[in-house]
Every structure is written in structure tokens, then in C-alpha cells.
Amino acid sequence: MKTENTLRKRFYQTQNLKAPPEKIFPLLCPVREYEWVERWECKMVYTNSGFAEDNCIFTTKPNNEEPEDIWAVSKYKPPLEIQFVRTNGFRVIRYNISLKPNSGGTCFAEWEQIITGLNTEGNSYVEKLVEDDFKKMVESLENMLNYYLEKGKMLKFDLEI
Image (cartoon, rainbow, N blue to C red; front, side):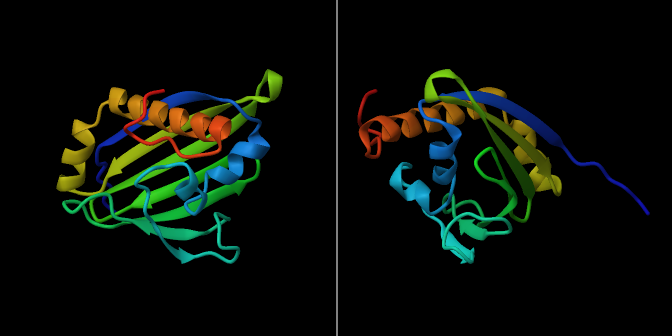
């Protein structure tokens, strides 16, 4: 058997969220993200509950240039850990999100992203990724989530925080 390693990168970032894990965890769901992530769109493919659960499947279409992504919930341990595997024809991304209780009814969310190219196109995609872009994405999600928790409504991109 021949093994051919393709490119892989790993990024890590921590969020400081203004609520305990029990309040945050349900919002880490493709259906509930419509409440707090502007421009979020997904299509639920399989779920018994209608929300995120173990082995839930959904799809997203990031933009017109990229192929549709298929997501699977591969680990589901409420209220402390969820893992998503996101794939298309050229790369696989695994997101691990762990919630750690903090003092004062807050928590830390530890985000890990592991991206693996599946072919030449995927390797080219992975090669261009930089940690700073991942950091900005996670910080943006932190701002949106904390705004939703404080105000009870979605943060619009044209608003200043």
C-alpha cells in the first residue's frame, strides 16, 4: 500500500465568551447560527432533533467559486465539546471546539482547526492559509456571539462594537 502525505496545517485560538458553557453550547449549531451569524446559510441533510447532534449532516456553499461543503458532527458532548468535519473535493477541515468554564459565569472556547489537502488543488489551498486569517475569523465569531449574548440580537456587519 502506498501512502502519500498531502499538506496539512493546524491552527489554534481561544475565545473569551460572556456566558457559561450551558448557554454557549446550543448556539454552536448550524440551525441556531441563523440567530447570531449574519449571512449564514446551510442546508440540513440529516438530523433527528432538527438541531446539531451526534452524526448530524449539513451542507454549506461558501461562494460561487468553491464547491459545496459537506459537514458532519463527529463528536457531540454537551455542554463542553463539539467537533465538525467539513469536506469537499479538494480538502478536509476538522474543527474542534471545547468550552471551559471560567469564573463569573463565563467560559473560554478553545478552537482548533486542522486542514488537510486531498490533492494538488487542495495542497495549493492549504499552502496559502495563514494563522492570522484563522485568528481573525475566530475573533469575529467571538464578537458576534458575545454581542448576541449581551443584546439578544444579531450583530450586523455595518455596526461598530
